[in-house]
Length: 263
Image 1 (tube, rainbow, N blue to C red):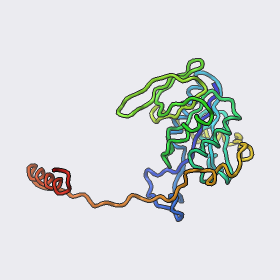
Image 2: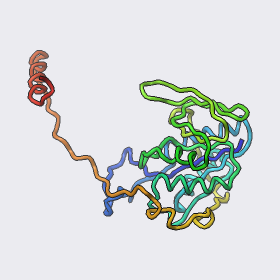
Image 3: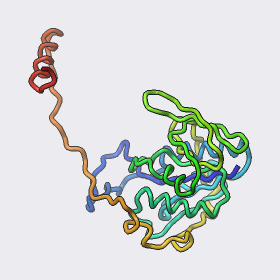
Image 4: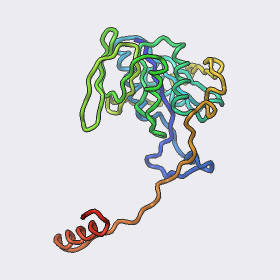
């Protein structure tokens, strides 16, 4: 079982004060810590669990500069066999479709039975790359997978739908699965584990290596271009209602009526 996992290095913003950068098209990332995308950590763990059970190899791919090596080495320390970084200044500004195109061209050079990605990335939340990747490679896919099992030449997947509903079906391999959080418990990576893979080669590929033209990638090749981002406007402060329960209920009724919530 040869498995390819696509990962992304993202800024950690959950406990940070986020501000908009000077370009108006990105957040100010100075001073922010970066780590492996949360959804991707579950994808790499699932790949390693399958390798431990079925044998084979796990190859990790990421698009980015040298900083992405940190996340790739984390995956190697978790148990991945090989890591490839797709890097080229021309890739800057690629939308979800072009990102999938870059990954697809790299994957065509690798023997694979299964491709795993995170359901989405923490920084943009598009959730596009996995499903577009499957379309470009001409293979079946399933999104939001929260349980899976591989048997012979197919994979049985459980996927999460709205309202707590779960869908179960089988796909022929090769296939692409986008992995949901909670499918497993990603293993802890120690400093010693990182040191053990510190000298392991991370192969790099650029536009020319992937048989892509500069005009096919980045902003020039993207149909979707980001114009600006902004913080949500601050609304009015909450009004605290005080008094006895019946008095509060009456005030709520008057407010709803005033705002048009009641006929």
